Length: 298
Ligand code: HMG
Ligand code: MG
Image (cartoon, rainbow, N blue to C red; front, side, top):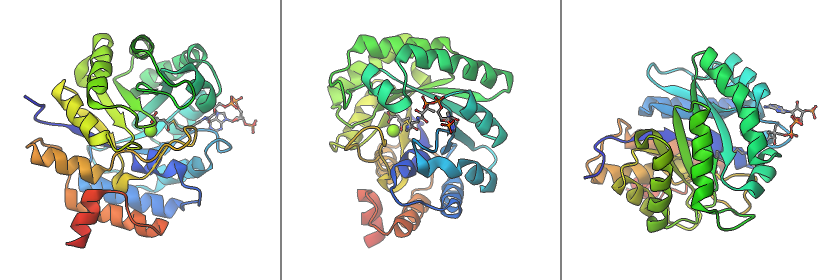
């Protein structure tokens, strides 16, 4: 008995594009978000208010947020590593802010330049401010299944960070396979560990597809009751601070899987395929979604 409804958080405009070497114009990003809004997503990660020195591609986030058409009922999220990011996200009208930490000490230092404990201390004022301003708060836990710098990440480390994110008042917590190394049994063990520290119905799976395991990991997560997944149109993406990491699992592939299982998402696959074709053409390459390419070749 798998969940009957799944929420897909479309992260292509953020996780997808943040890793692109060539600057993608705000105009193109806006059109991408608008196309995704029209496809019916309830939640789109559209921006990231981080240091432009660290992630230059996200420097246009305020312009993107100002230019998009807000579809009623769609939540537009932004990454906010600290109060400077929060203030920018608030000014830009984000509906949800995302604090992003890690289950790996080594990755925390590489990605946000501080220890896990320091990151939680930085997130505290962000969490408080989100509550004061009535914004939804999401916590992301990187390297929950393995780390590019330290290798194995113990289950206790995942449980610990999930507990800290819960204590900060997160409405939703993402369990992320930053480098796409997990396999189904491991995925279930990690998800069940997370679910001992936080409500299962508010846990999401964020799978990169580096080793081609993401769909299998999503199916395994569904089996243990996870009903929120992140994915990226055309399989765009990768984290700039995780070498060799490829994109998130492609949204088109996830939608095809869920549709075949009779699971509702409220998202129109064909419109996502078209959005994938649009952004791939802009980037001058073929999209990475198998389903997208199959449907486009029809
Ligand atoms: P730091 O250098 O320690 O920060 O970086 P700082 O507070 O010392 O500030 C240094 C400079 O950055 C200052 O500017 C600040 O103004 C500026 P300067 O005086 O040198 O000109 N600064 C900012 N600028 C804009 N927005 C801000 C901001 N904060 C400081 N919010 C910091 C610490 C966290 C800022 C930095 O490490 C950073 O920006 N890291 C972001 C890394 C990142 O975005 N990674 C990708 C997203 S996470 C991800 O992809 C994983 C995920 O998908 C899940 C998964 O797959 O695992 C979510
Ligand atoms: Mg990611």
